[in-house]
Length: 482
Ligand SMILES: Cc1cc2nc3c(=O)[nH]c(=O)nc-3n(C[C@H](O)[C@H](O)[C@H](O)COP(=O)(O)OP(=O)(O)OC[C@H]3O[C@@H](n4cnc5c(N)ncnc54)[C@H](O)[C@@H]3O)c2cc1C
Image 1 (cartoon, rainbow, N blue to C red):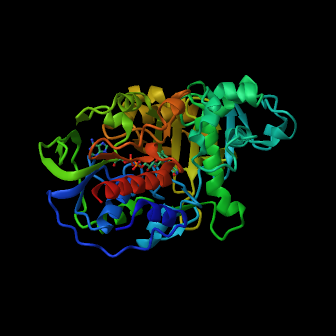
Image 2 (cartoon, rainbow, N blue to C red):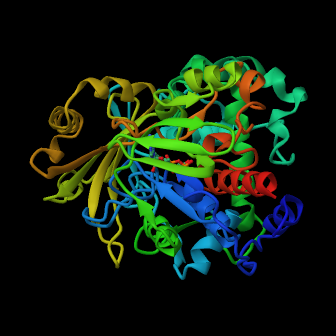
Image 3 (cartoon, rainbow, N blue to C red):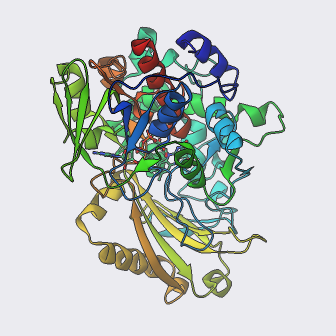
């Protein structure tokens, strides 16, 4: 059996692909390991454990696999409702996709079709007008930066984590940045409130005041690492997508498992008696295994009962750590409204609709559908609306700020990453002080229960973070059972 050190170094070299022969292992329990959740982290853990000869069963609460990887297969152009861009340096994810025979292609990003119209303080602004516009709060060369790019470029300046090792963010020397992001932008980088307000439109967390600056500077440092394949003029583009939809990856991963994934199995209780763990689902069924890997995100974990109880520090991390929320409305395009008013087809606003983008995902770059994408603080009010009300509200707001859209769009789907009982949000985020308090306490095993999920990743974030965490949890299991 591979040990942790050899596998970690293999992973660093991007060669986890080399599958070891499967040693036979006597099953003393019904399963050697149960994995809860079929997102990328759980599936990766299950594949690695099975490769090492363990008898594994994955239990998934939803009626589909993939968790926060969810391609809307029935919407024209197959937009991604969740995990979208695969970073050029996502070694584990790219390697797994390639091993499973999937093709990776450069992505079509939001706003790629015919550019953005900016709508700021109720005024329509064309990209060419922005550098000299009276509402542009920037100075000097920065005035050329478009509003949607401000967060990514301005907040990254003088990034103390730039060029550092990916896991340096939890070192004590960086705790001085575990402060409100707005304070960092104002006092360390010297931006005024107008600039900070424009950046706040894009943050995926709930607000720049409630977000740790350390979370954000880590985000940009990791992003820089993942783009470095492109920066180094490598053959590989800065980001990728799975041809046919990212969901094809979790589908293929689950199909590769001997026992597949049992769907509609919402786990609510985990009892560890020291020699085996039993897991009970909402349908009353109980499953037993020697080890359990739990990949459930914290907002859902809050409702799960553990015996023995989790350590207090972990219980409070589970209670307090949140995920960014977002809501999307997908539309069919009945009429090319941009041909009527001659403006760019997508709209970036500082108002309640935030971003509305025409997606050009047809084979020849033709427009396939449109999406209204709201995240962060503006997304909260949508939690109090039904899907019909959300769709009606976005159509009404669109028609108000862009009359040519009236009658041109038909809502087909409202999709949110947090509005169901298995949902958490988009990505985990840290509030000021939380990195210092919790970042070191989220990976510890609890008896025979191991935790993974993007929120527990040390190096990467998002989908690659999910892979990394599943790998770490699998090695923890292997270390424990010898
Ligand atoms: C809108 C959006 C955009 C994103 N964009 C990107 C991007 O461009 N690039 C990127 O890298 N990442 C992106 N992400 C983040 C990325 O998708 C996630 O970080 C990653 O997929 C998380 O994987 P996971 O396995 O940790 O968690 P999940 O995918 O959430 O998996 C957890 C699984 O557990 C299941 N579950 C929950 N409760 C129970 C229960 N009680 N019993 C059994 N099963 C349960 C869930 O149904 C789910 O399948 C995005 C996410 C969203 C929502």
